[in-house]
Length: 60
Image 1 (cartoon, rainbow, N blue to C red):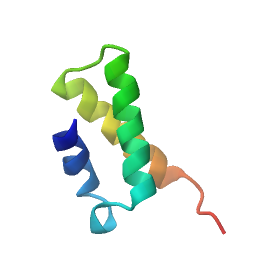
Image 2 (tube, one colour):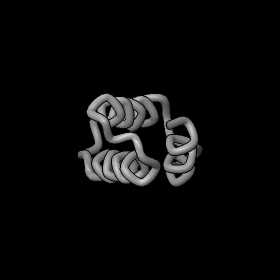
Image 3 (tube, rainbow, N blue to C red):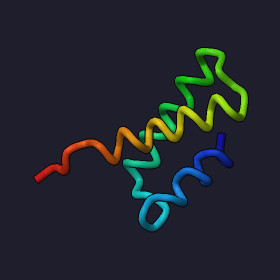
């Protein structure tokens, strides 16, 4: 999961801030706990989480 987190966060500015990395990591953990543990499944979860982050409205 660390490798996937690092790969996905490379696409974020400066490797992602703490909150972004935490959100993606939490999504990975939830997926793994649900039994989705293959590299492909976890990568897809991390990418979906990153897309969700990018589509969130910016806070004021």
